[in-house]
Length: 189
Image (cartoon, rainbow, N blue to C red):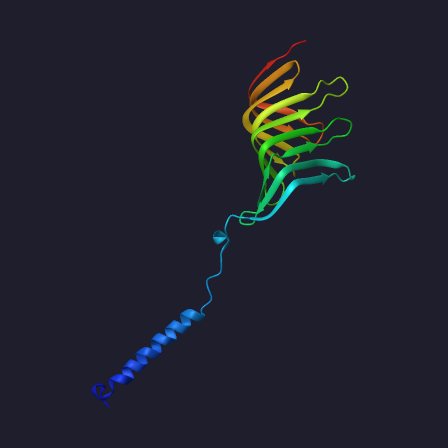
């Protein structure tokens, strides 16, 4: 049998059958799986009046974090906060208080970034007159018990004034503020 002897309807039927098979294969193929990059940046949970407390081994509070609101994002595992306030506790002295406009908590909870203007303060006690420090963009390293900033920082320990660029503050024992460069001060006695 030669090609000329095969009826055209057989060719048309074979072409039609192949088109229907292709269409069914496309229809039955599952869509590609979503990758992490395809996930939309949206909140998967949200909390108002958020509070997080970290405890010491003896059961006393080490730090406490408050926020007006907190939203967690699934795609990057980061939590964003509105108006966060952190308290750092040490025995026998009032807590250090750190306030900021915004904040983010890393996925593992060890880094807390306090964005915008940050205000560190400690109430007066005993002969200590209290202290206020102003900086910007402060990063708190919870696992290492310190906070830092690369920004200009001012410290007011009334009536004394100190300023400098960059700040490193260890809050594990007493929380002392160290300015890193361009330090200037005015001290009145």
